[in-house]
Length: 448
Image 1: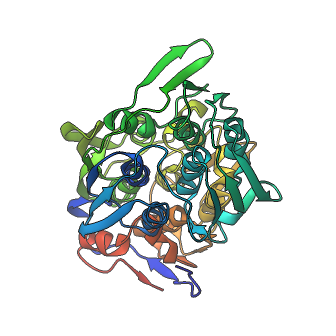
Image 2 (image 1 turned 180 degrees about the horizontal axis):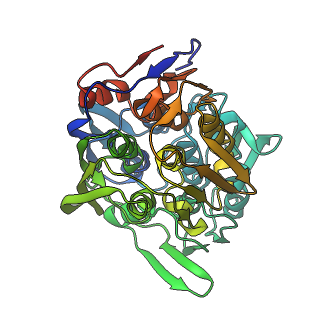
Image 3 (image 1 turned 60 degrees about the horizontal axis):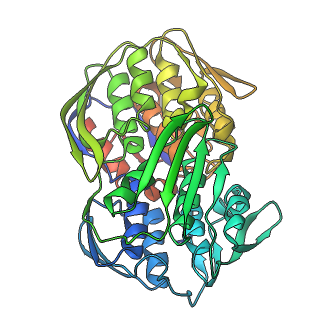
């Protein structure tokens, strides 16, 4: 879906504290994987709670184009009749992955192990993002890739007729690259081995086990070693998708910053490799607690209670970055309201997200009267110790998380905060403004 017309939005302080219980959209990472694994399993996979944002719908369309039967049976409810590992068919047309780097990179892993030819593209933002980080290791399977300069989309892939297992040490912490290698290994005989120096989100490993693959994880002096036994019989398995912790971050930070607020976000995924933001907020003095903790579909889940609290600046270690890579823009907003200085270290990976998210986050703060600077790969935020000045217009650079972080800032600022385009919020959080307005008891966020 092309966004021709920008949709400017603005957010202002609500007339009452934020209050209520809410669910956030399903976890994006798990939603993509549920559709892909359903498509390569034998039998019919029933999915509940699927995120129905544009990114995930692109994955559903791609799986359909590759021969799986994918149908929506109700809100968040989907049924996938799979073709078995190695059973995907050559698509008749170009696969358009929209704005989704996760879908594009994971799908390249799947395609590498199938003897077929496919062409992949995406929107303007995705066509700027580097794919070489996955095509390089995937070439070891025997797959061939043709890309634009710099390894960018559109690209063509011819998967390997007899794929070889991969043995790869990740040069950067990236769950997407790790997952692409593991998915390629599903069609290869023997053992695929990926080594990561810093642990990254492990939804792929959890879900592979849920569908019947043999995956082992071992911590060694070399790093965390993930091994997959190739050519498993994947069997259809029901998937209940938990709420996305990256989406839960926005109402949670809003509740911490708006005086008198108390918000409960239900059914949030609490995978320890995704909860770096919650750890950091607690270090800053946030009042966060978990109720109703449980396991669903191989993933830990619970309800998060967030109440207004005075926050203080902290130093965020670089090793925590992989567990909260998508949450830095909204953490920067929390840091802007905190007392003292917050230093977020080791954010190189933010330069290659939907936008150069590091520069965009610093610019978001500067436009609203908050002092911030970038030193190397660190972001330093000088907290106001109270209400953020606000009053600025934020350039979102087609990045949904920058847009939502800026609108959360507007709820806690003295003057309203505007964004140049909120259209892209739908890629990960359809209905964001309506949901936040429900907590505020009125229209705090709306068209500018």
